[in-house]
Length: 122
Image (tube, rainbow, N blue to C red; front, side, top):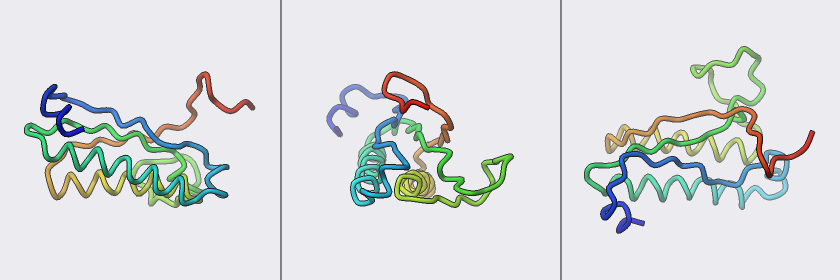
């Protein structure tokens, strides 16, 4: 991945990867935590080694709010409930850490309801 970033010099990388399912993560915590945490760690680790470093847009989840009462605000203390939510919160913390340590620009988007081809039905 480092070679690709050095060769093509991306300005922005959108980190959209991850295993998503709060419900299923309860029975497979290692899979969700390791995959989702490691994927953002790998992207951040490579991006910081490229000059100039690309901006990494990290897609988190509204699940990090947990049982906070609406209206939900970005300045609320996260209360992740379950491995999926925790993995997204860890990703957010990694982004903030890499910003503080290495100056990497890493805005975070907390998605709520995503719809599309492979979404779970109601």
